[in-house]
Length: 193
Ligand code: GTP
Ligand code: MG
Image (tube, rainbow, N blue to C red):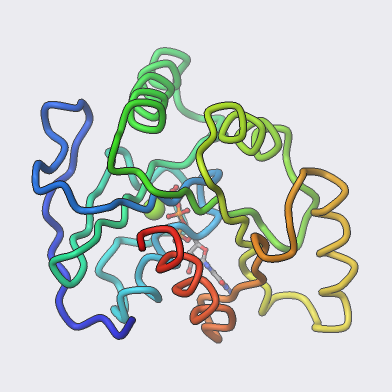
């Protein structure tokens, strides 16, 4: 999909604030600072529409980006950010769990992991948790521009060892080079059609 028209429609914390138009939704989840907002920007062809930051924990609400009057990308605040308080983490947990388990329009989740490292325990838990609730998930290994392509295969088999994932549901990506963008769009279109 070549995206021209995108609106930040809403930032939501609870279901009463979710958009009511009924378009299919694709959520982006992953630990703080992994690159969710950066991937959102690449998918919608914008430089910094979804605010990116070096500072983890930048995104704190569910942000619904309406794309081409037909779909929402939902940028979800990152998990595993050690410097937030326990009560904030619990609030986060409730917000995410409510959205991921109760949202009818949710057609799939893109789980971002840092392609340079092994999965964290939070990553593995999130993958298992999505499986438990039968949410279709795509694993995107990002920041791949930071490791040489000769190591990509090794990284890919490491991911296969850590979680259950079909080859079709694992994409190597870089927000810098945009490698993998078309494949990710293809996966999204398969989920919403
Ligand atoms: P939170 O909103 O805090 O959860 O973070 P996020 O997951 O939205 O991460 P964000 O997109 O803000 O990116 C964090 C940092 O990583 C920024 O400095 C980005 O420029 C950088 N970054 C993200 N993706 C890539 C990538 O593919 N390659 C490189 N080299 N840097 C990236
Ligand atoms: Mg973000």
